[in-house]
Length: 127
Image (cartoon, helix red, strand yellow):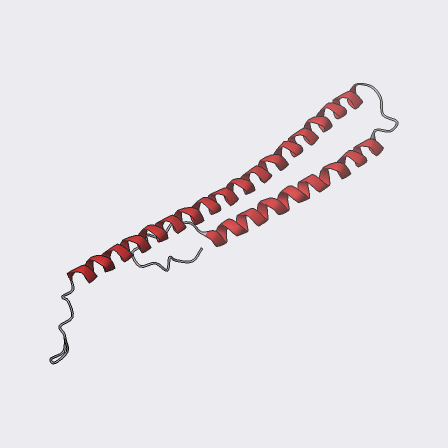
């Protein structure tokens, strides 16, 4: 959001450009990890086709834990991007409220100044 256009409005400190960059980076990472997990699962299926015994059970346990962790990480990345979006919206709402308050204060000041101004003096010869 650009600096406030309303004189007297206190600007909200929020870097919208960096927020955009962070959201994009988080979404790219979440997409890449989410897309890679099914491929890892396919490779694991091929690797253990004729595999039995203790090492197979160990591998299955570790692989399952890895896929679970990747899924959880993807969810965290998406929630973090959503939280940044929420912060951006909150900053925009706060800035709009500050701008509205400043505009109202400016209008009230102008009305008070108009009330203090002397009445116009009629030109000589006008009733």
